[in-house]
Image (tube, rainbow, N blue to C red; front, side):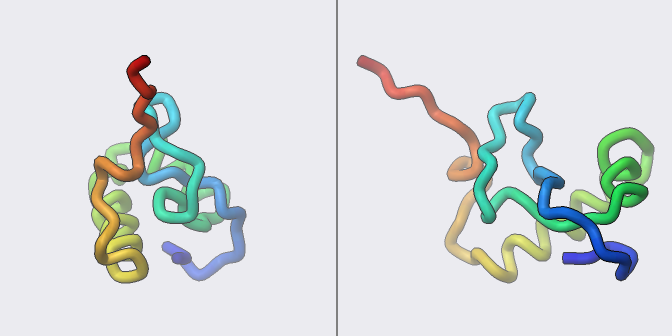
Length: 75
């Protein structure tokens, strides 16, 4: 996914790692630095997250948000 069309790196997490988001392709999109910053640090976050979610759902239709979060196994 490219929000603005500029090249970027595949490091923008839909569910942030700080909230348990996994570093898997079903939770990561490619954004340029300015768009990544917009998604992480501005009020544009909600609209960008919506686009990211639509993109991920298109490519991974059977992958739920719960599957994008780390779950520690109980022993």
